[in-house]
Image 1 (cartoon, rainbow, N blue to C red):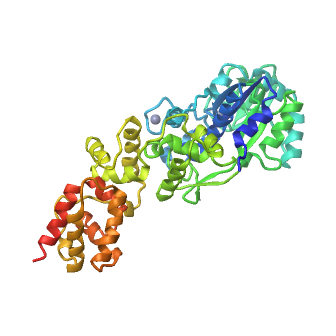
Image 2: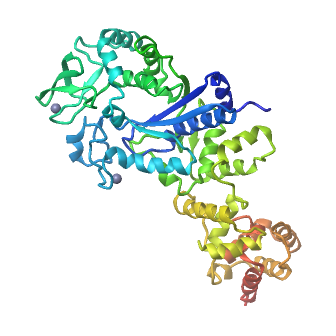
Length: 500
Ligand SMILES: [Zn+2]
Ligand SMILES: [Zn+2]
């Protein structure tokens, strides 16, 4: 079945426009994770699909740096209570390494975007306000504040107070952006009284305040000419911010709302990810163990409205296996491959084999080159890069069952193997020759077990015990080939020689 790829389908629907601006954005209030990344990757794939059709398109990313710190998240020191309500761009970096709180979380995210091959124009919302880009939008919102209140009430059922304001002044005294009451408006100044007791005037041209989220969103559609917007399902509910945003966009700003692309969550090992609860792996950290093309593939292969579960442990290997099995000629997979791998190329060595060989090489890349050569692989740049991922994956996410250590000395447990098993190893050792392939060795193990009257399972166990001091290990044929025939022959000889 050659279904058209979801990104191509969206591109087809919007390509009647001369130019499309795809807007993505995230509030950098905590670690940015793969769930957040779905938004940007979804936008990027639509962008690529448009470009592939020869259309003019732009991908933008708006960091909501002007949003207030909502509360003291578990990862913050208690002293951050005093910063609650201040824009993230004015809260100090809790780790002290960046200019401010927002930049601390934004910086590694921008770095990850680059690794993922996403190039977007970056905006910071505090700068958009400070540069005065919102001036007209704020003016219109203040002028139409009753009308907007009605739209919000109709959409969300929320009754707004008489003195409700679409604009939240930034208190000059305490720096909070969510604690003032608006007293009145004169031209470009908004008079306010803050909970801290301060009374002042906020200049709408200078970033001295911001529009509430439900108004800010449609306002920026117009300011930045947004025509496509991927957003999470939380904004897509009936009466949600997209619903009311559409009406505000048309009726207040006279702007056609963007084409919505609603995406589902990605859960991590079956749990919903949440930066505020700390159930996340920051995207930067994940990209040290997972090749970026694999994360792109995860997003590319499922329609945005499909809920995804991501497990960086064993299930990740299946995902990589699926990616490795796509043949570029295959039409349906071909597009997924293009959306996944435009960044970097695949390694010729299957990831599972890299996982095993890097352990045989004890993490040493020079040694790995030799080990790979034994199983018929050359190590190029891509293989070396993927080997780095394999090494980190083993350290961070691999289950114990995938880990092993090749024993330099004969393990004591090998000496207590049953005589029959030792005999099996002896025969196997005698027959091993350097020109045998992994597959040949694999078949030989079965044959030897049969000849020696052994259970195959027992012979496999004996192999692993004598080499790894473990009852299980990687597929034995390829493993023996990778370890090296000479080494294995000698080891099997030692086991049977010591039979006493
Ligand atoms: Zn920092
Ligand atoms: Zn104040």
